[in-house]
Image (tube, rainbow, N blue to C red; front, side):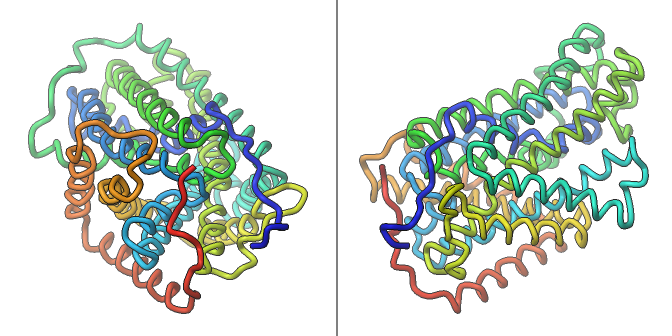
Length: 431
C-alpha cells in the first residue's frame, strides 16, 4: 500500500467495542446451553458457569494484554507473528479466520432453524438458500457502507437481543424454586471437566473485539476495558439464566428448547414466542459482528503479502476492505449451505483452542520485546501460563473427528502459506 492509499477511519468507541465482544459471546448457544449444563452438572450447574467464567477470565486477560500492544488490524494473527515469526503467525491467523468463517456459517444455520419455527418454508430448499443469501448479503452490504453503520448495526442488535433475555431473568427470578439449584456447589469431579469444556466454549467469541484495532478510537486503552466488561457481564447473565431455567422448568436437562419452555411456564405462550424472537435476533447479531470482523483477517493477511493484494484494498469512499468483505461473505454463504451445524461448530471449537493457546503463550514473549506496553495482566507468568495450560488441557480432550478436522485445517494453512511472498511488514507496531 502506498502513502496515497485510503486508510481506515477510527469510528468505533468503547461502547461499540463492548458490543462487538458481547455479541461474540452471547450467540445461539445460550438458548440450548441451560439444558446441556443441567444434564452434566444438575443442581450445581450455576456454579459450573461461575467456575468456567473465572477460568476463562485468565484467557481474556491475555487477550487484553496482547491487544493493548497493537494498533493494527489482525488480532491473534499479529500477536503470534510478533512473538513466534511469520509462519506460526500465519497458521494462528488462519485458525482464527477459520473460526470466524465456521461460526458465521454455523450461526446462519441456527438462524434458519429458529426462523423455521415461525416460517417452516425457510427451513429447506430454495427458500432456505434465499434467506441465507439475504441475511449474509444484507449484513455484508451494511459493512461495505462503512465501519460506522457496521458497528451501529452490531450495537442495535446487541440491545435488541439482550432485552428479551433480561426480561426472562427479571420475570423468572421471582418464579424460580430455590430448592432446585445449589449456587455454591461443585459438580462431581468426573462431570467437572465435561462441563468446563462445554462452558468455556460458551464464553468464547469475545476475541472479535481484538481484530479491528485500526478502526477503534484509542484501542490500547479501550480494548482491555471492553474485554473485561464483556466477560463480566456475560458471566452474570449466564448464571442468572441458568438459575431461572433450573428453578422454573422441571426436566430441564432433557428439554430441546429450554429457554422458550421455561419462559412459557411463567410468561405464557407469549414468553415462549419472545424467546424464539430473541434467538433469531441473537443469531443475527452474532452474524453482524462476524461479518465486520472476518473480512479484516483477510485484509491483514493480504497486507502482509500472504494473500492476493486485492484483499487489502480499502474503498476510497467508504474506507472499508470491500474486496475482503465480498470474498468472506461469499465463502461464508457457501459454507452455510454445505456444512452441518455440528461439523462447523466442531471446527470452530478446535480453531479457538489453537489461537487462544498461541495468544496466551505469546504474552510472556511480547512482554520482553515490548516492555512499554499498556495493560498488564496481574500475577506475573501465572496468568498466561495458566491460561495456556487450560487451552492445551481442553485440546487434549478432543475426539478423533475433531482432531482430524483440526489437522486438515492446519495442513491447508501450511499449503496456503507456501506460495505467499515474504512479508515486508513489521512484526507489529505499538501505538
